Image (cartoon, rainbow, N blue to C red; front, side, top):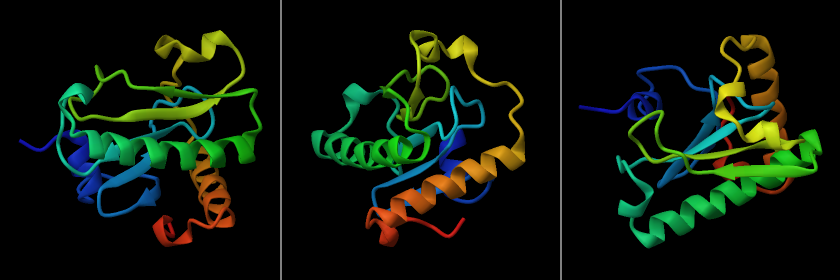
Length: 142
C-alpha cells in the first residue's frame, strides 16, 4: 500500500512542492513548526532512515542543505532545524525549518490548522530563494 507521501509525490494528494528531482522531492509540511517547514522525501518508499542506502541518504542530505540555505535566506533565523523523526508517516522524511528557540524543536508546537494562503506564500518565497541560488532546474513552478 502506498504511503501518504507516495500519494503526494504521485499527485493523488495535494502538496506545496519546492523541489523535484529523479530521487527526491521536497514539499511544505501541513503541520509546520515554523514558516517554510519543508519535508525532504525520497521517491522510494523507505520507512526507517537506517534502512536507506547510503547514497540515498547523501542525496537527501544535499537537498536538505540546499533547502536549508533557502530557508535561511528567506526567514533569516538564528538556526535552521534539521530533524529525522519518522513517527508521523512510515516513509523516510527529513524536516528542515527555521528555528528561533529550543521550543521550535517540539513537535507538540506544530501548527494544527495553518492558513493555506500563508503556506502558499511561504512555498513561493522558498521556491524563489532556491531559484535565485541557481537551483531552478529542480524547482517546480508550484
